[in-house]
Length: 236
Image 1 (spheres, rainbow, N blue to C red):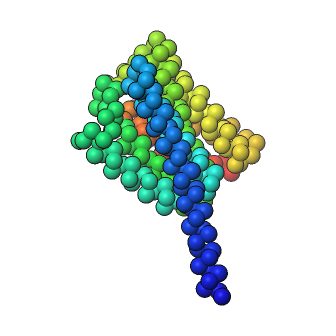
Image 2: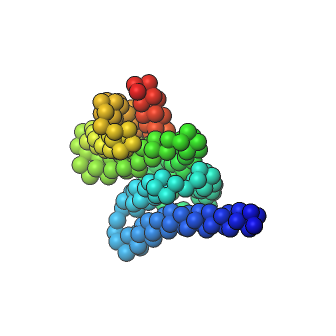
Image 3: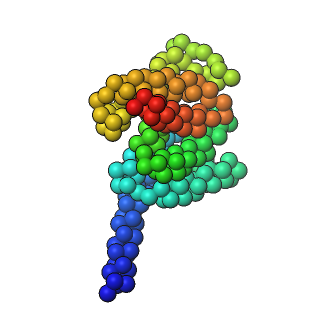
């Protein structure tokens, strides 16, 4: 009887995990379909298509947090995405991967950062910090590129990468809003929430300016998440 019960519970947990994984996978599939439709039936620039995928797929980390998907699922997905991305630099699996007029490892770094953050902060039972880092990368960097490209009038160059003050200000603002919202939800309305959010926003902005070969897709999410975690631990 006990063996039957354990088997039943194991199958039930497996079914639940399959459903949760399917929901996350369906979201990613939906974003890819949207990007394909926009690419096929509009005259949108390649950068717009990339940012649809960049911003859309990054939100899967919120779904993983909400559904409490186990860390190994996120880690395996990150490894698979990293392998596909690497192959795409050699073969036309993802033709738009280098369609922004420069060679970049950003997509690969993006996949790696998700796996690293899930592995670390799911293990620490502090998944909100992984979500914080990825969401800052997703929305802060994503919107900064779009706003900087459209409205950026005041340019500057860091290690050969063109930036704009308008885009950098966008990173700061979005990073602060994301950090403050997540800390407010998980830590409460305490003074550390607002101070840490401001510091993390500044750190994210500085890291985003150094985007040689797309390294900011690794440094911004990991740097933001680790900074927020350490600061909250030190100040609490």
